[in-house]
Length: 297
Image (cartoon, rainbow, N blue to C red):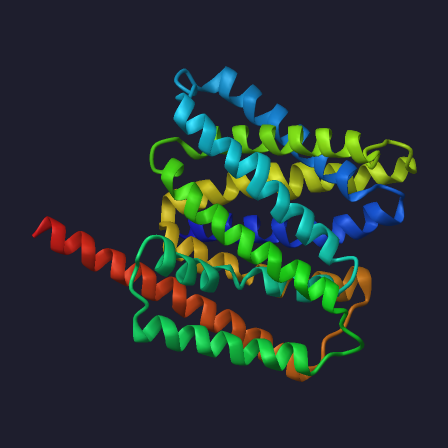
């Protein structure tokens, strides 16, 4: 199983580089829309080439195609836009940390949408994360702009909707096919939006292609492939928990490449946030296992 852990760790590292690559791309004159269009266009091209060469049965039904459009063309498009704009206003490490509030929002939304029960363990875990978040936002190392915090939390909420909606498809469509269509629809959305708003252009410094390629291949294609491969080896719960190391890696990378800092209170609060989110994931998984066991018995 150590191979699975290594693969998920590599995936978390790839995703952790996203805000680093993004900020370097912005410094080179790349717009958010252009960066995200290229990211998903390259990813879609790779995934569909893989499917054409390696897979025989990768076509999906019209109903699945509709859900994949919602996931890629709307949810992932909005989530990426919010997150990539958030790093313009707040430290990348804080944006990554706020994004990992998504297990909490998944639990809350599942309560209202899927009528899943909020157990005392889940409520306690949510409370722990909220206390940690108060510590993070209440003890800043430098000013924190509310716009950036709002965008990052908005990205976490939308990502939670993406997870809940995606569960209807991922159980029936293989991950590589899901990733291909999501990337395709996201690229199409950014192309249309960028054309209408005139924010899609390629008039940026040549050095800007390096972070663009890094975002597309290292932080998208390789990160997705290693996560799915690792998840198949160690299971979704362990993969989800291990992937929570991403904000920690982002923090370390931001210190090295961007010279960002966080106060000790923020670091402690961040660890508390991640601990609470981890408890939510474990509590929801335990409840699922109990349901399966009761069904089998």
